[in-house]
Each structure stands twice: as structure tokens, then as C-alpha cells.
Image 1: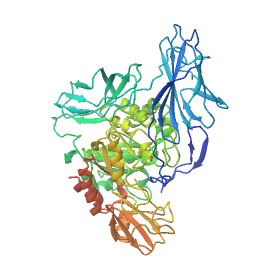
Image 2: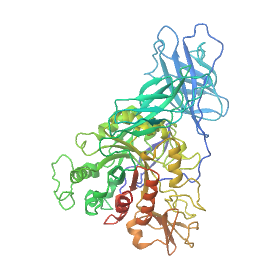
Image 3: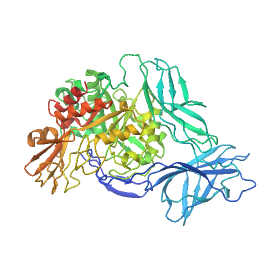
Image 4: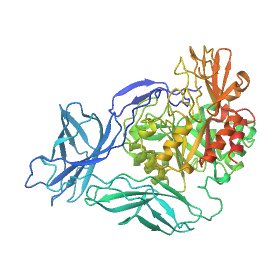
Length: 634
């Protein structure tokens, strides 16, 4: 397997953790063996004041944006309440012992004991009369700020609101849907001082503000999918959290791309890895010779890197420089030394010419390269611009139909730990949608941790849903030989079962949790692994046995392609909708055409958009797993 040079892993505090050579494999939860305690989001706005200042020219208010138990996200908003322009601002406050700021953005934050000071950065210090500026931070501990001062005076300034923001409205519903119009309605929000009105958003863009709980939207396009959310505004003009998202498709226009009941609209997506062209000797042409190209709708090209807050090329040689001979090429034409584009990108271009229905999405991040997303989240607009410039590079702009973000994991731990805050993923996806527009695909691969307080509860996946075309839910790698002594367990259980090592680590729990966050099934794809995970030193055939370590694998211990396991260790049983096998002292779990058929039936029952898989090269030469997905989604 190809290795790239060691790269620096970083934390939000800026301290380097380590340098380590990235392993270009797709892992899921090596750091997720212990589920976090249940953490309920908390939002509150408090005005903090000392003695009134007669000539106060600014106010500062604090909002606890979210609280996930082990930490929280806070935000200060400074407002110029005077009649002259402020050239700078400084906010000071005290925290009780045990509460602290761990990272901050849009301000320079320092401390002296329990006293904290935040000064504006260069671009947000100047405030005209009536203007505001905000900065945010992540914190630890249970305490609340006190003794607030802004520019030396009281933060209250005589005008600071002291009530809490309104609650989230209920998820909207649509009635009277025609080709060009519909009527939205939603359950009312609550507020201690009363709700004044509601802001209505379509696709992340504010449409209007209304006093009631209904809105008639018109001027729509037939056969088009729209996403709506609503936020409430109280009498102090504070806005609360967003409602759940409603996805609705107007009739007409031929095939309905948002209707999961239409087999032609279902997603059948596979990952193509750039490093697969080396030791695995798997090339774009293999999609043709296996018959797989005729049975898929999308390809995720993995991976682009994320460095210094920007999207960058992952492997330039494999991506656009490797020369293909005639027998290796999709169309039987050899590359020449002077042609402007070679490598996988050119082969994908040829594949799309042969199969024009296939969409190719450039995927960034993955297990190894997710460490750069925290820095990207500090300036989402700049990150989105860099990604757009790379994906839409004139040399290969026609190859890609959009961008995929594979962040493992926002505000949680994967290969490294991210502390960018619960809102960072939503902000990133919003910026990408804004930059790429509505004609490009914007997608994301996300955790499938359905446990209480787990990864799906640590980032705002529901809030980000209006900005994505679909989520690829990574419903595999729940269990594996990183727990060297077991217990043995299927790495991709569809449902829970008696004896499952961790509650919530199964596909059904993940999909149920995501739907509970307001994400429609028509934006969710079920994940399938084209490989198995296994242990050795096992004496028990059924799941739950002890082991001595990972089973041997072709490229890495504890993991093996389906095409190998099919013959070397045939299945001996099934559990929770997937298969397992014991051969000698080795124990493996993996999906087969039969178990995939069952999972596809379940996906249709759940109204899911479709399925995706990691990755093409694990399949047989005749693509039998890809065929099972294709047939199962018909």
C-alpha cells in the first residue's frame, strides 16, 4: 500500500501532537470503543453586567451555543451602542475555578488565573454605531462567566437583553405541493418573553420573516428537490436554534431525483481509491471489465488531502500523471507523453464518455487526512474557495460533478481529535454549498455511531443536512481486531443482537438517530464494506468469542478483501443481517450477495436514498457484490 510523507497532526490549541506516516486505509472507530455519556444540547443567553456606566458605548452578551457534557461552545457578541465608531474592543470576564477556554476563533483570548481577556483581531475591531462583532470559543467545565466588562465598562450598557433565546420550532411540513408552489407550516417555538416572528430558509438561504407559523412559497421549478428550515425570533430579536429540515420535491420534470420510491433515483455509489493503482493493480478499466460500471450511479474518488485549511491534491502521480498503455486504458487508447491530462482523472473522463450517467465526486479527507479539517473550520469560506479552485481546475473540471467531505470526525476523535465545536461541520457544508452552487453535488461521509452521546450527537448533522445532496452513513467497522482479544463481533451489523459489545453500534440505530435529527431518509445512503474484519486464536464459532489478536490479511492484519475471503474462509453463519465465518482459529465477518440483498431490502423499507460501498477493488472480478447492490435496489 502506498505511503505518503509524514504529516503534522494538530489540535485546535495549536500544539503539535505527533508526526506519523498516514496509512491509506478506511477505518472507522478505533477510538470509539467507549461511547460517551448522553449530552443534551443547551442554549442560553445571559447578559452579564457590573455597575452601570453613564457613558457606556458598547455592550457584550454571552451565548452558550451547545454543551456536550465534556465541553461546550460559547460565543460573545459585542455591539457598538454609541454614536461614534469604535476602533477596537476588549471583553473581560471571570470563570470559576475548573472552567476554562480551550480554544478560540475571531479573537485573541488570554487568561490570568481565572480572569479571561479577549481582544479583537485585525479585521473585526472597527465597529460603526449599531454594528456588532462576534467571537467564539470551546470551553471545559460547568461554570458560567461573571464580572463582564467591555472596553473597561459594564457589558450591560443599560440595553443588554437578559432573557433566553427561543426554542427550535418543530420540523416543517408541506401541503398543497404543485410544480411551482407549496405551503409550509410548523409547530410554534416557545420563549420566556414571547416569540415575535420566524425566519424561513430554503436551501440555507433566508427567504422571508413571517409572524405566523405558515408560509406560501412560489416560483419553484417542477421536478426539483428543496430543503426548508425555520428559526424563531423573540421580542429582543434573539434567534434560537434551527428546526429540523424538510426535504420536498415538486412534481413533474420526469424522474423525481428525491423520491426514494423511484428505483431510477436511487444512489449506487462506490469509492475508487487513488492508491489502488499500485499494489492492488486496480484501475478505472476494471469497472468496465467487471461489469460494475453499468450498475452504479456515482463514484467517490478518494482522497484529496486537507492541509493548512485548504483542499489539496492527494497523489499527483496517480491522479493526473500516470501514463496508461492501450491495454490498461478504458477506451483502448494509450496515453502520450505530451497530453495535458493522464492518470486516473483522464481514465475517469473516458469512463464518463462511455457511461454518461455516472457522476464522479471528488472526496477529501478520510481516516488519515481528516486532521486538517479543524483548521479549515476556522475559515469555511476560504476552505470552500480552495476546494472549488481544485475541483474546478480547467484541466479536469469536466471530470468531477461535485465534492464529498469525509471528515472523521467533526468535534470528536478519529486518528486525531477535533475540538472545532458542534457547529463547525454545518458551517463548512454551508460554505461549500454557497461556493459550489445548486448545480454541483455536495455530499459527506459521516459517522454511524448511534450510541447515546456518541459521534452523531457531537456535531450538527441535522443543521448541515439542507446543504448536502446526501449523506453516506459509514455503517461498517463498528467492531474489529483493534480490540485484539475480542469479543468477536460482525463489523457491519444491520441491527442490534443479544450480546452486541456496544449498544447503538449498528446500522438501524444510526439511521434512526439521524432521522430523529430531522434528516429525511431520502438524504441517507447505507454503507457496505467489500471486505471482512477478523481475529485469530478463536475457538468459538458464534460471535462473542475471545481471541489472541488480528487475523492475517493480505495488506494489513485484521482486514481482508471479500474476493479473498469468499474462497479462503466461507461463511458459517449469519447474525444481525450480516455473515460470519470460522476457519481454523480465524474468525471473520463480512457481507455476501445474500446479506447485501437483505440490507438493500431494509434500505428500501426505510425510504433511504440508496447505498454506497468501500471500495471497488475488494469485489470479485465479475463484480458480484456491486451486482447485489444494483439488483437489491431495483
